[in-house]
Image (tube, rainbow, N blue to C red; front, side):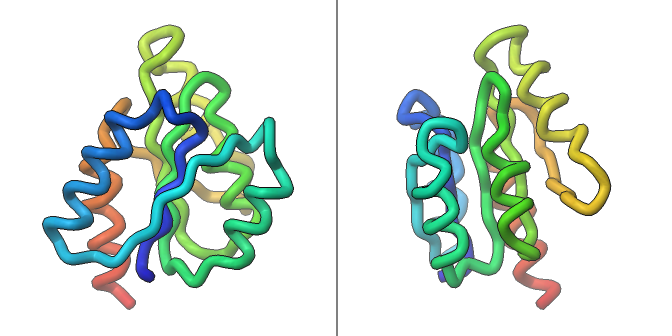
Length: 127
């Protein structure tokens, strides 16, 4: 599998679907899981550490901790998709974009799962 798509909540389904549609269109093998970084950190650790994915796409709103936590568990590229929940998604966007040094997360536009999939394709093409 090339990409693992992780979403923090089933309420992110519409963005997940857009992401999956592009991955399918581009024939990129992927898996998809729902897991909250806050509510189930051990499950998340197991998913990330047990994955053979080459790129992670993390869809998250509110505090948007999911992409950063995933980036702390792997050296592989992580792409964050901020979700428009509170504050029009700006809170999520800033949480994803303002990661500490050494824990990089690429960040696409608010609710833009499609661009996350396109970016994953470009990253995979570099390998």
